[in-house]
Image (cartoon, rainbow, N blue to C red):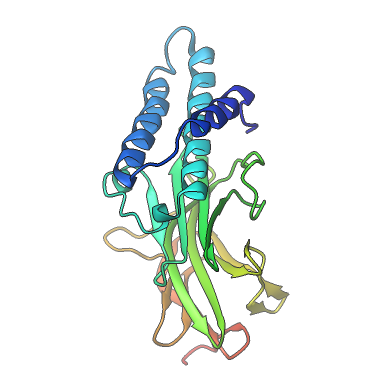
Length: 263
């Protein structure tokens, strides 16, 4: 969705007046802004519903840009707990504290859900934030996305550190997707296209699968075992049901490669 020019001008004006903030004040301000999106979403069924739907988008734009500005201008936000805000959206932080993902439902979808995300990272002594796929840029409108990032793993090998972000993708009440995406910080920017997953079709940045139904009673999602450096991908049967079996991709020194059955 294109960002509202008015909302962006508001953010620029707002931050021109801010000289210093503690993270508690920032969190209160962000939560207040986030609540405005929900306020208008709850009223989207009013007779003037189209106006209210526009308001949902406008206030989500304001919240998203405000979050981007806070996280790019105030380095201490990378270490902030944001305890109350974590109740409203996903805030995923890497084990080394150098990478963080803020992700939330933007309240503008139906059975197909749309999510927004801000990516924050530290390179050298600088803390930066960005939308994707526009690394290291804070003035480019964020793309609409279906990805809800809900887990984050840190993987180190040699002098390189990779961040494995697990996501779900809700396209309808039946059509769903889940995957794991690789990030790394290189030369002062966030690289979200690094290809260290090797399959029969070549090198990839993402592993994913489509499904309709999840088994009840337990979490059968993608996970990473840091002791064996192995990614576990749930196996889906011919009826698009997620099973309790997994396909494994183990790091072999250069790439994650599929492990033969039984190993």
